[in-house]
Amino acid sequence: MALSEPRVIYGIHSASPYSRTTGLPYGILRVVGGSSMALSGELIKLNGGSAKYAWAVEDGLISAEITLKPKEYPNFLFELFLGKAPTANAAETGASVTTLTDKNGTLVVSTGLASVGVKSGSETDVKFGNFVVVAASATTVDVYLQSDVDIARGTDGTYQNDALKITASPLTITTSTAVEVPNFGVELTGGSGTIAMTTADTATFKSRPINTKSMDVVIGSTSDLPLEFGLIMIAQQRGNGEMFEIDAYKCKGVGLPIGLEENAYSEAEIKAEAFYDSTQDGVFAIRHVTP
Image 1: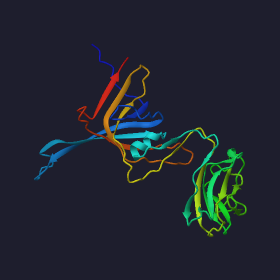
Image 2: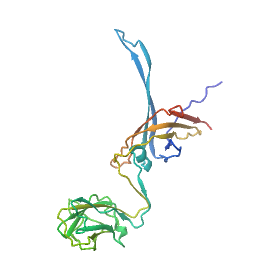
Image 3: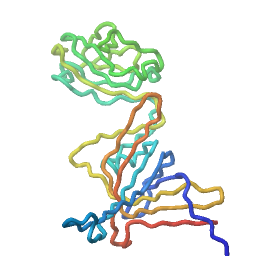
């Protein structure tokens, strides 16, 4: 009889992590630059005397290192590899701002600023930004914007100097009254008492433009704990219909590099280790089919 067709593997289709408890998928990575499992073993050699070669060789440990190269950043990546599930926010048809928070001193008090909000009728001017409010005097403030990435949304905003100040002149803060940050769709409201701020005190807030979705996550808490997970990696379906799958039962990875390069899509290279699953009595399984 003739020799059979060789089994070959071509390309990458997807990688899908799943819960080891329920089996349910966390999601799917479709935009991937690669996914591989490197099985690397040791050989323990017995050397001694004047012999140039080993007297004996025995098997050592085998590591099963997985490398994932996603070019997308779904929420579950942060949960699995950094230990923190992001908050997925619903669409915001009226834009949004975060709470005004003291950074240096006590600018946000009854004798200073009470809050920040989106100005009614100016929602389309709200930009994606990080703001710093600085007391210029006892009754006035200046506002700074930390990046101009979205400064042209709606009515164009402009910087006034290289220190990134966006207010042409200080804004006067009046008791329980809102004052607009011009061209940025947000307004600052004075406190309930007599306005008496301390010069150079600062507070911060962030804004999001009108959007269909957004997410937030704070990484690095002492309680953050990357999760164990299962992982199914599937090669690209070949022209003859062949398919190849690796199912790693028990994996653990720590760390999620996020690259920002000039004129390039971000691609992470994530390392994980597959290890023994006593329930499955194995580390991983392979399936191949020729329809």
